[in-house]
Amino acid sequence: MSSTPPLYRLCGVTRRYTSAQSGMRTVLNIRDLSIPHGQIMVLVGPSGAGKSTLLRLLNWLEPPDDGEIHFEGGIYGAQREPPLALRRRVTTVFQRPVLLQRSVAENVAYGLRLRGQAHADARIAQALAAVGLDTMAHQPARTLSGGEAQRVALARAMILEPTALLLDEPTANLDPYNVGVIEQTVRRLNETQGTTIVLVTHNVFQAQRLAHRVALLLDGQVVEEADAETFFHAPRDTRTSAFVRGEMVY
Amino acid sequence: MQLIFSGDAALAEIVWLSLRVSGIALFISTLAGIPAGALLALKRFRGRRFVVTLIYTGMAFPPVVIGLFVYIFLSRSGVLGGLNWWWVPSLFTPAAMIVAQTIIAFPLVAGFTMAAVMGVDPSLRVQVRALGASPWQSTWAILEEARTGVIAAVVAGFGGIISEVGAVMLVGGNIQGRTRVLTTAIVLETNKGNFSMALALGIILIGIAFVTNFFVLRLQGRTFE
Ligand SMILES: Nc1ncnc2c1ncn2[C@@H]1O[C@H](COP(=O)(O)OP(=O)(O)OP(=O)(O)O)[C@@H](O)[C@H]1O
Ligand SMILES: [Mg+2]
Image (cartoon, rainbow over all chains, first blue to last red; front, side, top):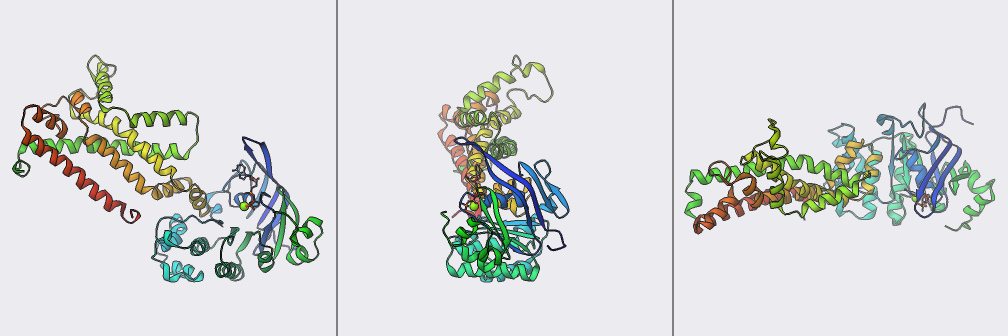
């Protein structure tokens, strides 16, 4: 396929959890998955398939139990965590954002402050304008609505100009207006900055609207990974067709 | 009332010693108690449950019994007092009172800090890490989010020692000009039937509590609403 190496390559990556009831369980087992540079990759799959777990591994919020994650020329795994500077090239927007009990602007500035970058007023204003919240900079974050809070979460991630932006069901429970703002912002970020996007969604229509490539996860395994056109219109796996037709129960 | 404002030198000394002893004890127990509380709230380790039980017990422990233990340890025939090490304070000194008050305040600060930190949304830690926080930075973020409760923990520690009588009486001995503090002076003046003096001291004590809490509320600022 393309000659440039992918941003991520996962080889034999597994993640196991131990719980009191079911003992040890493998929730993720990825034989070989590449996430190309500068594209929007959408992860779909039923609840419990391991989508959020995969995003946590991609952001090094937890290590894999086995396997290799190739990223930006390095190979990382269970015993080898990337240095902080590299980890900071990636960030995640979660389904339920938790903001700091501070002003909206301070929330947006937070990641920059962690990196020792002060005096970023112009960038903060720019990030807030991108999500349509420029008038709310000085409002306490806890007074925001769910949709506004999620837009702040997107702004505080965007301002870091990450190489990869991971989004875990960022629009679940949001109204169409907020869904629109978030989708538009994500698409523009991808187009103008070339940010690699990995988006988890339960919404097949959203996947169709945004995806360049799509991967279907089932029981922790990648069933099919293809460009959006193929995935939605000529899938190889019957389980993919069932998912696309909305026949998969989740 | 006149007594309070007359600028009596002995009285000023008592107030100053009270603030100094409790202030230093609070400083030490805050320095140790906030990290300890944060650690207990955020880390899972063997024996954690046991340590938490100890802290909770300490929070409800009668100060006078702590005073008794300190007395036994520091007395000339005691475990530490007998060693004559330079850093072991002698009984009936402000230093001995500071030791007792530090032990009284520590579990209060640590216990309430732990509760406050545990009250912070557990997702916050993951989300600030996703934004690029180092382990220290994420711990700091959690403490900042818990700041209202952490400040309350320090206030509880201060309240627990500035108003405490039994332990300072035991290990300090209520020696005039050396170890007499507000609470022990109140006991003494009341016993002597000197009610107006006792009352004046009591009003000063309440005043100290009020003024500190007033400033604490200002410190908690916007989060307190
Ligand atoms: N910390 C954990 N400890 C134990 N089990 C876990 C943990 N995190 C996730 N799991 C389990 O791992 C499996 C995959 O979870 P994950 O959250 O990745 O699924 P998902 O695809 O994101 O699902 P959803 O669409 O519902 O968000 C689930 O069965 C879940 O119960
Ligand atoms: Mg999930």
